[in-house]
Image (cartoon, rainbow, N blue to C red; front, top):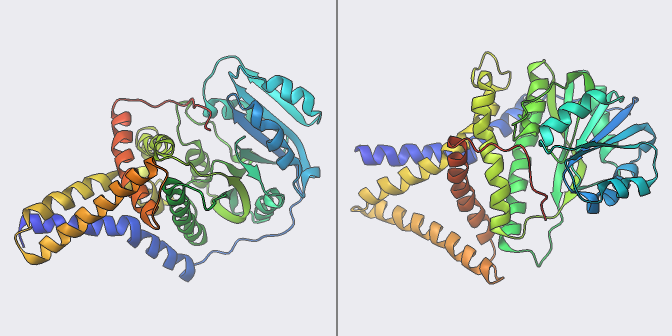
Length: 381
């Protein structure tokens, strides 16, 4: 076998493992070696922490969804960390009228990790819910999260992010919905097998005593905080009945910006948390590497596969494979073009999401190389 053929098939094998092999393997292990989690009615006190920047327009609806919880009587406080906000956050909360709501305003805008580092140690509840202002919580969500803490091996419980999709959604939005469904399947398998290497940042809970401060430049606090609990010998599990509702990004560019930050955060983990690269230091090393880091090399594998295929296109089999690759990228380009004029075709949204995800990965890695790790965020639409 020539070098070109070896590179082609190795790159295809790598891509197959990243996007299909690992999900199938962890799914199989999740079934064969399932670790059950006790779920019983939870008795304890609860703090809710919401960190945000200029979220005044969302706070009333958010708080309504928090206090609509079936165990709202267990909520002793809701801490709102205003990270240098200059909107009407203070006035909105003053009008809300629930004495359990407390605003903690920070004059300097530092980012969500710094706000969490300051607020979580102040919490009085035994369990802390970390959630964002953007998403609405299902009324059963908080109770279902907390029920998992009846199992003493559980340290973090992640909720599930669900998208309210409609027939009028763009191809990018539909692709995002499909991608998140794929992600949730992997996370459920990881939770059944051992632990999930991260939580849904929009909605998760942690035992207060397990929280450890994170570096203030952290981009993925929803990975670092749960992983620190895993390091302490606890599990991070998924409660798929604890739902936070959101609307999918309607534009490829909007979703690309969000994903670019997430991928840069994965690269940042290598720098900030190098011990997690060592299997004897990381209890869920295989899941962490396969789910969080290997996707960073996916664009390189795609380039190798295409380049090697071009060199081998003199034979019918490799020529057919090259045509298939070109058709795949052509479909993504078509989906992008249609999205620019408000049109879409079935299934193309997923193709577009895959290609744009890998383009975004390249841009995110360039951000990482240049040290563009910014913990502050802009309010999303």
